[in-house]
Amino acid sequence: MDMQNVESYLDGLYAPDEALERIKRSIADRGMRDISVGDSYGRLLTMLARMIGATRALEIGAFGGYSGLCLLRGLTGEAKLVSLELKSELADLARGNLEQAGYGANVEYRIGPALDSLMQLKQEGQQFDLFFIDADKENYPNYLEAAIQLASSGALIIADNLMLRGRTLNPDKQGPAVLAMRRFNEMVAQDPRIDSTMLSSYDGLAIMRVK
Ligand code: DHB
Ligand code: MG
Image 1: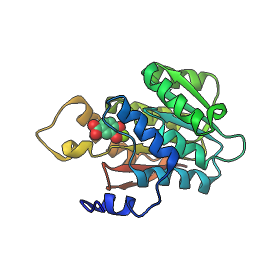
Image 2: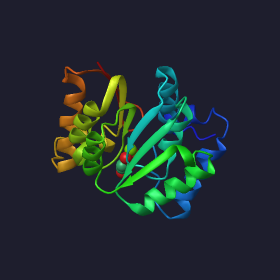
Image 3: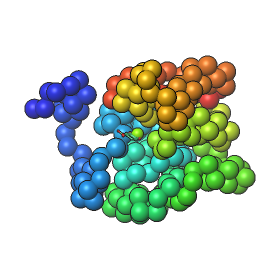
């Protein structure tokens, strides 16, 4: 058993998940580094969706469809996932993977800069119960503001990569992604419109509830 760290020990206790492993293989087959959300956080997405009875979820950043599948598994009723993805190749990959997993009819991809799609969704009057932010880090503060504006009352907003593999905590790092993530983390802790907590496993995860 791989016991190199706490996360891999805990992840290793679970039975293999065929659909999620197929997604990971599809990413490796394309020669891409796997930046899907951590296994435990994927399970957390499913659990949180179920716990709040979410029917409509919005993710920002599709990548291979791993988080999308985790979200869809937790949705109830007329389950709908809107997935915002900059790159059409990744949206195609994620769409194929979710179709294979049986959720093709429940997902809608919107391709292009997510801020444009978020403005469009707002103009359409759409609302969501659950959000997962996992795209370009420079825009995290903007994505949080948009999510709060698209949120139904009591909605959850989850965000990945708070620690940027250590760069968030390294005072020598002052690039745009790092500055944005520091600002984002402060917003998570201090914005009066939300309750929140932040988890430090993997690369850090924020969980917020819109009041
Ligand atoms: C990386 C990890 C992520 O989860 C992500 O969303 C983007 C990048 C990384 O390890 O570089
Ligand atoms: Mg991520």
